[in-house]
Amino acid sequence: MRVLCDFIARWMGLIVLLVAIVSLFLPTSFIWIAPKAISPLIGVIMFGMGLTLSPNDFKIVMSRPKDILIGCLAQFTIMPLLAWVLTLVFSLPKELALGVILVGCCPGGTASNVITYLAKGDLALSVGMTACSTLLAPIMTPFLVWLMAGTMVETDTLGMLLSIVYVVIAPIIVGLLCQRFLPGLTKAVTPYLPAFSSLTIAFVVGIVVSHNAGRLMLGGLTVILVVMLHNLLGLLLGFTIGRMLRMEKSKCIAICIEVGMQNSGLASSLANMHFAAYPLATIPGAIFSVWHNISGALAAKAFQAKDKERQDSTIYNL
Image 1 (tube, one colour):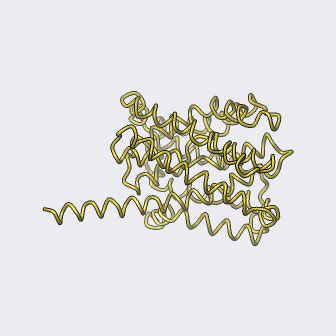
Image 2: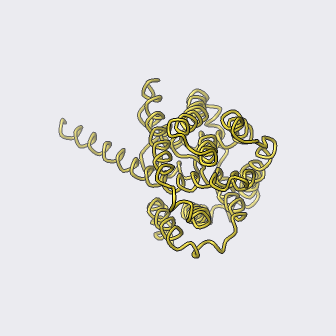
């Protein structure tokens, strides 16, 4: 079982891609699941995150405030601004522009810690950034969506804040409480959580894609390009900022991945709950969910290869 779970976690990008392809060309495979199931599924993922967080993760925020501050500032400036600029450059329709902005304003993705680990980045910084940006999300995400998209559509800022509390913060708190009062059970299930979260993310992607398959088939090429650029530029700028501030390479990798990988499932959930009048707004989140897992896995492979090349060079020089 552990071997299977490790396989699922390692090949999450491919699994999500396969689910997206199946749900795009065979929508009936997931269309029987109502879109309102997305929020509970995101809650399940956040609950798993709460189970894996430890007091040491919160100590990181206090012991390394400069690193966490740099990472969170990058998270909540680079991706929202990139989203806004890309929607203008590509003249996206209002509904799709809203979806791209929602993705950009969300906190770091739940898979970023796994990708950072595979990329040999600073895992402690990655976990600290994820925890911090997630806890800031109830305030930052609604505010940034209002700031970036408030002139296009009417935004329910308070409603989004409450939704993020219910969908994200409350499940994390429940997970932390389970960890505190049910340590035996928590320890038993923790090794399987990455695989479980990966499959849950795949389900979210399947639901969103299947319910929007027709729209994606008709006019998805431009928004796919925008989503890919959004993610790739986020990865690049995240790493560049770390380098410009003369941070260690492992920290640069962590910031790169944290900035580039968004909680796009939350973006689709918010679009479904608060912008139902704009159904296309769920599409960028679905595409991002597929693409950032692929690009994250490829980035991890690239960083691994670069690290191995450096090690080989060091051995040769010795």
